[in-house]
Length: 236
Image (tube, rainbow, N blue to C red):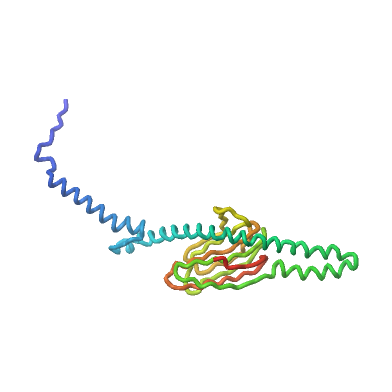
């Protein structure tokens, strides 16, 4: 037997109480939507509470990352025809590399020492002596890309700085004839004012940097390179 006492009609909530509870729940959900969900997910903050709590900044980061992903896909699509155009140029450059040692091997007939020593100083500047400085000015939300044409294993010392602000960057490379969805990254960052190091080519092709200005004012990026590369070119 069950001795539980059934509630009386007076103990049950009335229709007015149920309606009031429903309205309260809807209002609470609306407040959370406006002050928490919209700022953190979509960077929409009509009340200003989300920015105070740091939720609006979280939403802005999410939107920037999504935009960067779209921009990276666009860069990869544009880089493919550029790589195809460069491939014939490499075919013209490569014969000059083995041609340098050829006179050194043929030299022993007339003189074994003097011609070889004369060839060595001429070869060194071609391999390690290239250096350039390039600058690009980016308007708000504008992007730019500079690529070095390099052979596998070649190394380049680089230093770039963003004068007047900070930029988002993506260091990557594309082999000759790379497929559309190919991506090989060396490093990336957000809101960075400068970066330096040694870039070593993982394969024959183009290797370099893509920058985007996410500030509200123009930023000038200056790139300095020195090392073993064939050419340097602004792609975008």
